Length: 113
Image (cartoon, rainbow, N blue to C red; front, side, top):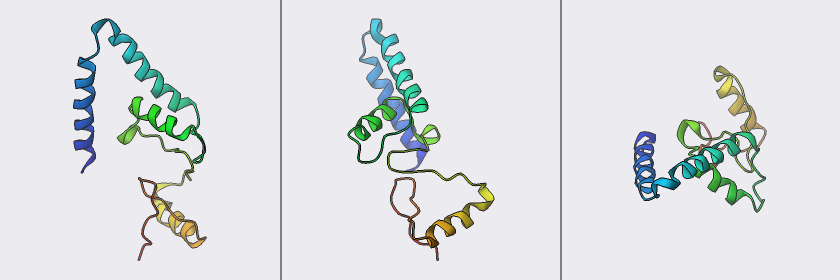
């Protein structure tokens, strides 16, 4: 399933859920969503084994951190920033050190042939 379809479906669900919120509370719901987004931008994620990891995932979802807005730092993972041109060499260096390279879902990538 491509990202556009996911975002379209998520947008439809969010729109549908927001119509169920009484009008006098809509501002507070919107502020809560914005606050969740701000928290995920300002607070580093917890460690993978932390009891806060599930709460963190919930807050990032409420804050609409999906697709291109998704946080690059996730519980239990690190991000090594390299120039795009050096990405294949960086992946190879990490893999040759015996460290698994993770895909977007946090699962080890298949080794490059």
